[in-house]
Image (cartoon, rainbow, N blue to C red):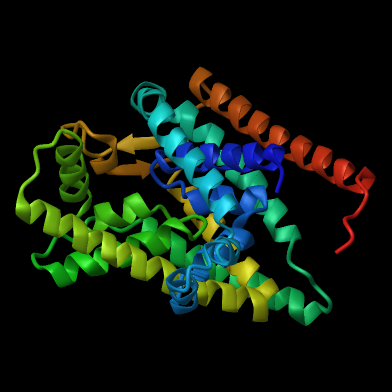
Length: 319
């Protein structure tokens, strides 16, 4: 893999990390849009006993090739950079320009949902109908998740382990935000609080235990779920893509530009509750949101068109 491709994957990670900051937007959505989703799932799913055996025998090069390590490192560096670089800026936009920010992401994901839907291979009318039904199911599931309120936290390491496993699975599913799942499970504040304490070297023994159990849950959940996703994509690619597309469409409810704040007393946006509404008049805010959303749609479609033309003129690699 060339250095140019390293930069490309780092840029993809940068976009994934930036998107993860926005409530209701998943890094998995961005990976699917950018065309690296299947490769990411494939790489993560190869963290298994065979990898451990290769490392134990000192075959580090083979181990790195097995998990596509160079790709994961480039992508991971981009994700970390995106989160660190854009966290403050994105939070500023969300706090002061919520409608406009959501309008941009709404347009991006709406147009991207159309592009993902085109990836579904349809051979007969029945297969087309099946894909539509699966997409509706996916949209319904995503909608049910993003409209839930916090379930409240429960004590114990078993619950913490489960929260880690569930949240990390959501992070690689398009349309479902892992951070939002943690908020629903009542663990977001506790886990982020411990991470901040670790950064400031002010963490307790119990805090380290909790963070370790949570990280273990994330690791186990990520590997097992990625294996399941790889199996689905290999055996039922069209159906799986339809389901993922449905997740993206269902998540649009969460990022509808026009939201009524139901918890004005809450400061942090990740803990706020919003209720989407339909604007009663065509005022300046509505017009600006429409312009931003349509512009985002146009940008996605133009970039897709450019990518298609580039692929047509590039010579195919001989394997």
